[in-house]
Length: 107
View 1 (cartoon, rainbow, N blue to C red):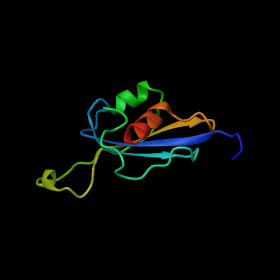
View 2: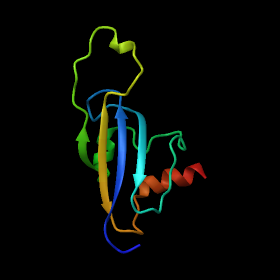
View 3: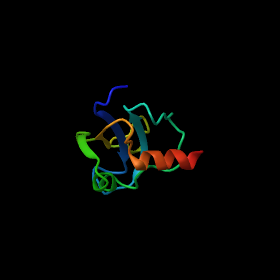
View 4: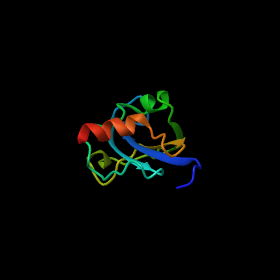
């Protein structure tokens, strides 16, 4: 692997459209290849809120559009509506400490 910058991606599904609402689901992807993960391998999210991720240096790159839902949709469980994508750009060998900590806690 060369020494070029790599992208880490953090996907947080929040309880509402507000960045300070709680995380209800998440996924992480590490483009450095140094922190392999699988869906469901963690019991606790890496951050309690989207705002906490911002405060730790993650950059918000996409938020789900707010869509009006019809009556009764609040009982549907087909998808999570409040999806936020964050990124960090890191040099190989300098992985995000939060991602490493949560992986080490699982070991």
